[in-house]
Length: 255
Image (cartoon, rainbow, N blue to C red; front, side, top):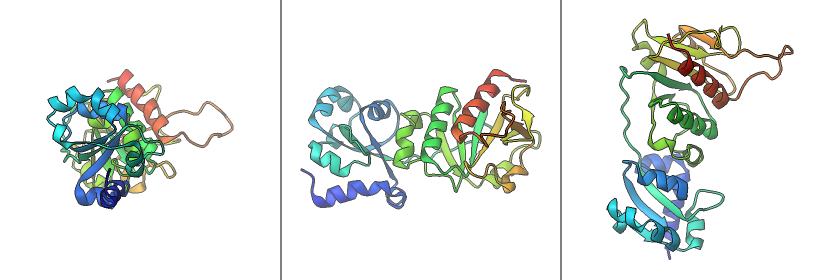
């Protein structure tokens, strides 16, 4: 049985200040742990019920983390879990120090002010599906290690690099002829007739305000998903849905 102090310590990682302070984030559930155990992420500790430990005994030993795997009961798991419905296992993982080169090949996703953890998690899953290795976030985006974001990635967080940068400074440093596509609701080139460059950046703006004026100045190709209704309803698409459509077209049509 976990002590009250240990329960308090483990449950506090819902808050970003403690994640940043200890350089740790939480991964929970059978699906997420199966993805985590296949990754190179540094697992600091696993707290799991007997059923999960027995089922995963071989890989725990192979990974050399048997001495960092603690058996707990379902009541303690419920006390420390950050999920509304706890699922067999809770783990603490070291936050990696991601490095992203300005010379990366292919498409890079840039997120400007994304606030919803579910949207960020879904965009990470999309990047994983389309083999996009890098996502760059403005510093005011939601934390990628927010528990809701982590869970909504369904394991893709372990295969896609996410880096928080000063966007104006980063975009300014790119070559002047580099293609920077910006998703806007109206007035851009029709995405279904646009031809795209393979090595490029795609900027997606916030759910409520779109791409900020400060970032728009770096966009050299404004693109729009055309609305087929004629009554201007609905006003816009969800950020993750818009990202999916944009990526699909960029991957399908290349210059």
